[in-house]
Image (tube, rainbow, N blue to C red):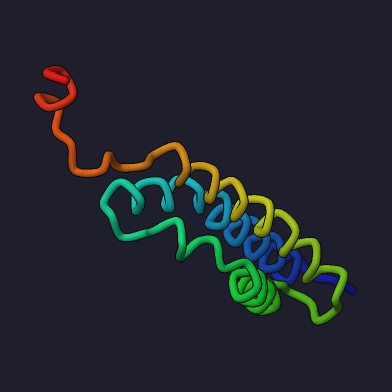
Length: 103
């Protein structure tokens, strides 16, 4: 029999984990504005997907592969959104606003 404590622990783990993961595109966008994230660093998909699946395996409350994939699928999709949000903010190549107006 499942107790309310076990159920609430499982529910809290899933909700908190997914809540943190859904903030990833916003975090990447602000890191791009600060210059801490580059497009070349985000484009390395093999290692990124490996790290995503390792994180999903840690956050998954059970040990089966289906639950790990359920956690990893939105993480991979949000990683792609993060790459797209990084593409929205591309710093100018050293030209200031005065130089653009005069040319």
